[in-house]
Structure formats: C-alpha cells, structure tokens
Image (tube, rainbow, N blue to C red):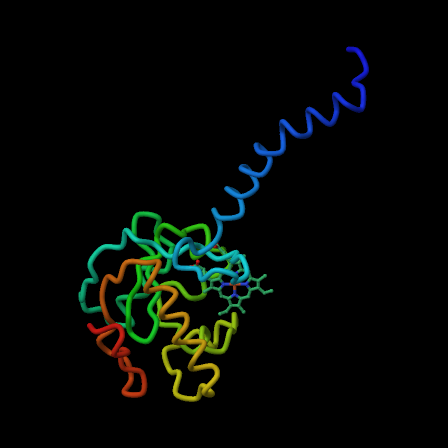
Amino acid sequence: MPFLSPVDILLVAFACAPIVYFVRSRRATSNTPASTEKQGEPKSIMQSARDDLAPPKADPFTLDELKQFDGSDDSKPIYVAIKGTVFDVTRKRDTYGTGKSYNLFAGKDASKALGMSSLKAEDAISDYSELSEGDMKTLNDWHDFFSKRYDVVGKVIDLPPHAKPTSTSNL
Ligand code: HEM
C-alpha cells in the first residue's frame, strides 16, 4: 500500500469526523436518563426513566410472601419493595438476582438500607424510623427512581406502623 501524503491524511480525517461524532454522541446518550434529564446535568451511569410502564397494580403482599420473589427461583419474578410499594425488577435479574450486586434488596422491603446507602444485610429492613432527614430524602429519591423505571405490582400490607406506604405510591 502506498504512503499517504499529509494532505491525504487530512482529507481522510475530515471525511471521518462526522461519523466519529455521530457514534460518540449515540453512545453518550444511550446510558443517560433520556429526555427526563435536564440539560447540563452530568451523564448518568444509571438506567434511563421509562415511558412504557404498566398501570400500577395494588395486589397485596405480606413481607413473608415477598420473600419468594428474591431471585432464587428463575421461574418467578423479582420484587423489591420501598416504603411499601412493590416494584417488579425482573428485567434487571443481572443486578438483583442471586449472587448479584443488589440481591440484598430483593424479596423484601429494604427501605432502611436504601435510605442509608448501605449494602449491609442487617440494614435491608422496612423499619426506616431512625433515618436522618438527609437519609429520608435519599430514600424518597430511590422511591422516585424506581417509580420511573419499574412496574408497581402491589403494596406490602403488613408493614409495622412506622413504615406505611408513601402518599406518592397512592396504593
Ligand atoms: C462503590 C460504590 C458503588 C458503586 C461503584 C455503584 C455502582 C452502581 C452502578 C454501576 C449502577 C448501575 C447498575 C445497572 O444499571 O445495572 C448502580 C445502581 C444502583 N446502585 Fe450502586 N454503586 C455503589 C454503591 C451503592 C450503594 C452503597 C447502594 C445502597 C443503596 C447502591 C444502590 C444502588 C441501586 C439501588 C441501584 C439501582 C439499580 C437499578 O437500576 O435498579 N449502590 N450502582
């Protein structure tokens, strides 16, 4: 193959620039909370909000019934409850399934751990009565995050009195 002259190299670079820009911008947006993200906010590694969620359901679950949806049985969905709202996170089995990073939240109401940003099993409980104001905000932000990304399939009916479902869950 003959050597390219400096002029040839410049021509090739100019010809490729639009293609490279297009591919890079597609990659940059594919991981961000799509159109709900405000202009100028940092790119997020979190999954985007969805616009294809099913209408929320209000099926009743006891904390004990929730346990079977912890990802240990591939034939069953995986549920995570936050402040009594039960979310179907099955499509993220690679995140919530057995042995995966966030399996400790699966099959239970793990409000306290989410509020505390804790990955300790002992914190993955529904009693969030001791959370600080800041941690309560974190917990409510997680509720909001899940509400925009996962179908609501029901509500926990036997939460202790301190942890009734939020008004935003409206179930
Ligand atoms: C070094 C610390 C951490 C790193 C590097 C990290 C990384 C990540 C990444 C990459 C994701 C996106 C995963 C995906 O979309 O599949 C994610 C999501 C998440 N993280 Fe973390 N994380 C950290 C700590 C924590 C802690 C302490 C908590 C405890 C509350 C937490 C809770 C979550 C939750 C609930 C999600 C949402 C998963 C979803 O999309 O449903 N993370 N994290």
